[in-house]
Length: 472
Image 1 (cartoon, rainbow, N blue to C red):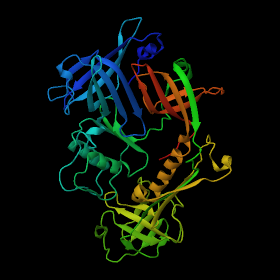
Image 2 (image 1 turned 180 degrees about the vertical axis):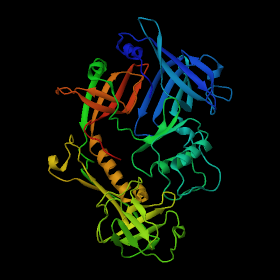
Image 3 (image 1 turned 30 degrees about the vertical axis):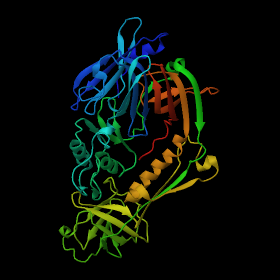
């Protein structure tokens, strides 16, 4: 996140804008090797929070020397990157206030001789260095990440092999739950995407500085409003709002994997907080394979701090997918439960029944789509494809809550056309008062498009509900 200065805010309200442009040219090691200043004729940009290719930038430049011509000796080439800045002159002080628009690779270039010689460039952010467009392919016939590998190490190792040195990996404290195998010619992006999708609610991409990030999607409860209504209203040219009336679900079910247990114990007994089961061929815990899955019939639901003992051996705690002791009353009675043994943690992770299942309801106190307010249930069942990789009830429940969020909270949008705010970014909060309403409400910016040379932009926002905190 860029720190916004008061001068960056002040220049937005000037009656006249004097624009300046500068493009830093970076080599393959991201060292500055050249500058292009004052050549910008027009430009456009976009930022999308829901796309891994988060930023794009297009520009037309006046050609002033041979360095603009496409070729190995030009700054427009396959092994260079561009970092455009827009500058707006502060009319009172004369100072140029610069804002970085992003770090990009030039994906295409074209020339025009229509009265004056111009170069047009289409730029995309550094996801191109991972997805095969400008790098990211791995050598070898196959790539394998073994179960039990720390996800952080797997992600960092993939980035290192792809040549990415600057990265921020947050809230990724899980292990790879099963072997991930990739065929020949796999890209770093495909590997990272597979790891990211193991759990719901993660995002990845590159920021304006060219730093890769993988993290939980921010919920922004703790964030301040970047522009309130008093600051925003003088910049607004027009507004529109919409609420999608299709694709809204207040009840979601998620069906995940069908689990194939490695061992079955049949009945179980509960003594105190310990389930006792019998398994053939187990005389010590060393006879159990890491990540081995066992199943047994649950005669009594679990008490607090439940444990499992095999053949009278040491009792190991039963935990959820986050490693937290299972809440009392979680285990259903009269059915088979499946548990995964994890050697390092010395614990049994509860996966669910043979068919992984999770569900959620819209319980947002601000939502108009709850069953109570709407008067009906809108059910959607998610299954197949990516959902087949969900291997526990806990994860299926998290994914269900995430889908409820996507299909209720995100259905109402606010779209604003306004004077360009070059430093505005997605996933920032604004507050606004809709025409005909007197209440100032908060919104999260999801996408931006505009032009610095035309000094206009459009933003699309979704409603933000401060009272609605969800866990994903």
